[in-house]
Length: 286
Image (cartoon, rainbow, N blue to C red; front, side):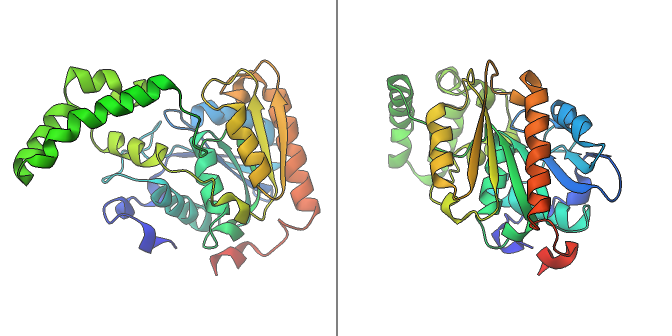
């Protein structure tokens, strides 16, 4: 499912290679936890623990995070989505499932729920400070973009091999390092390429197509995702609610676990009660 959209090298990463921890009763409501960029399943464990008494919770490490190996090729959001779909259809036995996604895990969920190929895999989305909406950029960011463009400009006038050498030299220079984000600078190789492909993927134009209910959870002290971005999601998704976590930062599920767990269980109960999670598990495969 989704193989046509996947990079040839990235497609060789089989979902069975993802590290996962599974909690809860076999017949519990299926829930998939997706962590954010630079995070891991370990930081989603507090949610898994709270949901496990009544839910069958799959808590996974995405490629290059936690205990999962790096992908052989750079992966963007569509490649991650195809991998998640493969995991749901294979390791979880099919959909629909409730997706609980933090930050970049939320971005992947938003893309999948708005894409006809994957939409039937989900009964509901619970998203904690999800990324995917382009932020408002300040003057400092614009200055860095201008400098980066100026540094790469000479490569346009060089032969191909010389241009490749020049660009490689630039991206390893101290000046370029100073321009990059801390996340970007901490990465190398395929994970740096994956980071670039992922963080530059936005979902604003896609979200009106989402048909399952969505619950947003956002900490009012979050410095990574702004209230502007959350408002764009809340107004753009047809069936969407918002819970503001007072005093919480970007990791709302760590700062306000009681509220997050209660809201998530309520969302799961409502989606099951409405019948959106009552379809045969294999239905989404078609």
